[in-house]
Length: 369
Ligand code: GLY
Image 1 (cartoon, rainbow, N blue to C red):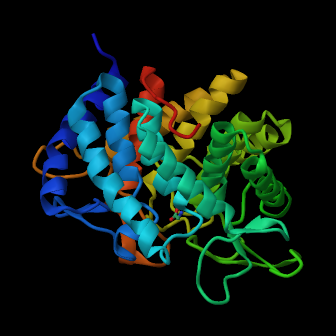
Image 2 (cartoon, protein in one colour):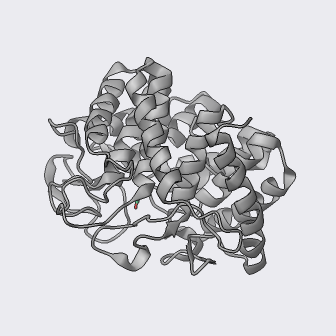
Image 3 (tube, rainbow, N blue to C red):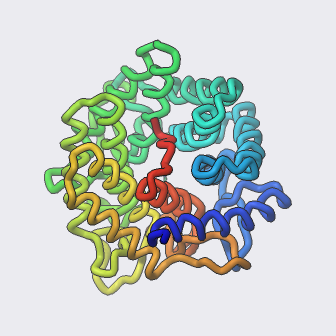
């Protein structure tokens, strides 16, 4: 008899097989589900940082059973994403999320050469954001020349991938420089991580921490904690450098200490205790990182807590209704800005929930490496 996680993966497959039809009919990249219908990204059109997660979800479903339906839908969106190379000005450090999980996944699973070329193109764009003063620039706005953010730890996998593909160590050198800066400047003594650090773009000297998508300056935005947890785990998998594994384990211990009794995840671990503001995306990302940490170290607590997170989501926050698009509910894009979604379905939550289930079921193609 299939277990709970196999049942959940099957439910996701059926849900998204149905939900891919309106996505293709309307021609959009689904960002979130509102009143059961797909909504495109709130900013920057197809250049918004989340565009890769829908094709990534399709590739996860393809990897499990090789159903060509999912490959076709993934490629529909890959075309929209590679068109953004020409627009260019929306693209930022999140090209790792956008292209490694779409074109990179395509190449990994089908060997398509154009998909490999497009992924290398994205890696070159990410390289171009490196400031030799010691960090990868996050965003494009005026005054943000010195901004680096914790999320970028996830994008470094694109650079490590490019070095392995080409035999050229430049990409990996840049990834290591940025990871070392993040280790030095973002990781706090209690195992939490900052979201945004501004550096002097001329010298690389730290200027200050900025408040980001969390509750307040110096607080613990849970999705940032999850990016750090999984990002340093991936940096370890890419380099085998024990300093990154140690960082991932410290961030994991802090994250585990803040999992709610119901297995759900607060939007910020420092938010007021009477505030009901959840972000299950953070829990889904952290579950993926914890499952990888368990695979690397054998630490049973990592696996047990990943299951606590997944069980919490399956118990309380999944919408399996066939009429409505989107599965994982109670996701929040940003603590103080409800514009991109509060307590709603957001597609990258669905992606990380699916990746975590695939890991538990043994079908994860590990799209990050
Ligand atoms: N990478 C941006 C976010 O997590 O919202």
